[in-house]
Length: 405
Image (tube, rainbow, N blue to C red; front, side, top):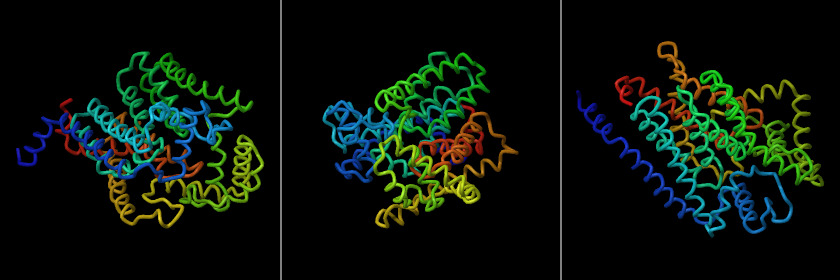
């Protein structure tokens, strides 16, 4: 055994200790970063989530301004923040929750890969999370992506296994999936992919029904709230039409994201209610697609490719950072290259069922997101799947890493 193998097996003997060290490093460094940022928002969307949670505490109303009820933002993340704001936590403390969640993602990914492959595969994934600093940066914002990542990985941890879980596991997973959809509605499609996978490999329609029941229970409660408040059917939030227009209008480009001039539509909709605006924006987007079919098809294809971009167009030049772009290029480029190389090797090293699940969710999500527009932030919860694929591939290139469970 050479010197490299000696060191490797020494790490293997203390792997749990190493993982815990990574977890505490993540949380402690995140705490330092949170206090460095202070009680200010980096992006205006953060203020929306904070105001919604604050009004839930002060006014007992899901409202942006404290007066009119709203459904513009999905409800789960503001509701998650509410008890902590009720305890007097400030913005800097709320960020700490994201860093604990980031550490939770590390532990869940380790546990999942340890069960499916080996402890060292899980350790590799934990190290790759540190190698991908955009996850750390995103945890420093009051956005739901980090909390949603924990929920998503927990659902995968509970269901993505070869043996069929107990019925109660399906119920718990369904409730978590409902919560996840209420946090980020775009998870509807990835969860649909997971349902197909469960149906094919677990072959238990009764337990699948229990899973769907858990989703419908939570999503149905919020849908009923919206109906009673607005006297119209509103599925989770009223910003889907706006997002569809941002990605499908005359000024939209593959990488424009939310940086699109749609002022003429906003002016036309200025006198409309929140529900009417959503319908108006959606109708204008569909109208544009149908009247510019070839352009829209080309734009859709380019948005799919842009899903894998390492850089986004930003609102102002001041937001741009050459160092951040370089770090993103190196880190994401490395993970994506490993993923693509893994797919190229699938003939000589076939994908196992778990790898097929991760691959299909990650790739198919690009086709779904491109219906609206693609941004790195929207992709982040799925980067853990990319990290898992890279860790599994590295471990499979060295087969002696896999036998010990």
